[in-house]
Image 1 (cartoon, one colour):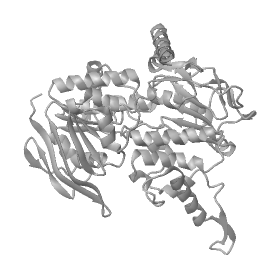
Image 2 (cartoon, helix red, strand yellow; image 1 turned 90 degrees about the vertical axis):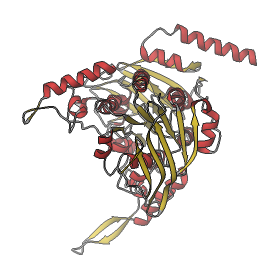
Image 3 (cartoon, helix red, strand yellow; image 1 turned 135 degrees about the vertical axis):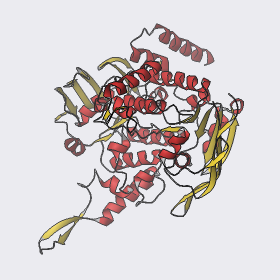
Image 4 (cartoon, one colour; image 1 turned 90 degrees about the horizontal axis):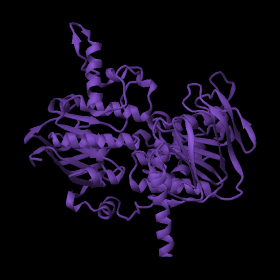
Length: 529
């Protein structure tokens, strides 16, 4: 690493509607370094990146590229400099192929026509170089969220950039996919490529970064060299309080004996063979964790239970009553669903907190009798009751800002996820299904989400949590099911469980070493006692 500064931002100011979100922010990246950018949701990280990439204009300050002042007014401007950004929110186009997405707007041509053969060959060369589980000709609509994230990464790598900005690049990746990405990052660093790495997974930041800049409330809180990156210090600087990140490395699982069966899934099988003969139960007041690698069929199973997708065969029973799964019937019966893609499926970005909370609750919002244009009597939604429901959700789970008219699309990831959860808390829930509850959410907001789920369980709600984060899986679950290639391959209950045991089950490898680890942990704890 040469130490030469490639990008420098000085005295950056930015406000929205008179509210400052960045104040005198300083940020620099050296050639060939991985520079992590951290802070709570709402600290200003995304705003700073959007100014660097030309999405937002700055109110004041200056940006320098290779020592020269530059004005970046569009994403095209930053691409010309040699900057590529891999955003947390995916921008792939589902009807196009992998190759078409990777080279969108930069397609190789033969005369006036796109040279699809060459484009596929170029994409295949990238896939081979970085060992990604993709094929150039595959239509993206057929791929899961994790594989779509890999396409975003390939798009950045295809541009031969001097600086890559990675915003939560592993949020939807399996452990194996994440390890592959880490190898790529180390290779790029050795080749002199600089990387701005934004992640709420602290262990990744500690492992990868050469330096770390922490933002808090739109201001610089600290810039740390690698030797000074101490986990406890980083967390305290970032959120102002100590959060135990070690919780979840192992756990003694406890299932409540004799608890009433709330959900009973019997022989559920997918039309496209993405999962087969899935049978399990969830009890009243239980949090069931559903683990496994991306592509194992976890998301497909919970979507079938809720009724988003129709299963080919099998039955779903709730409190002893057989259901005909569909979103309408599920809502009616007291089942809530927080999808993996919260921006695309969980909320409407242009609508306010109040409107988003009301979306699934108009059947319980009060109505008023009104006269229509022709003098006929009609019913209309009570604006006052709708607003009261929005305010209740804000107060109940501390949504910030506490403005019921705030557009959810302008909120931080953690608060947007609270809105998605909040709309279900307005109902008399029996079962809540949550898919990747804290992807892209900071450590403080994660803890708040966990507390919400635990509170629901104590109230008797059955909760299913699908997550790729092993630490999270152990943190929240009373019992764990692991899926692999469309089948449930392991159940963990009433025993000491470690991340390695879960990972072993998900990967289909021998569990002996993981079991030995758990036994050693148990013996050590008995010795301490």
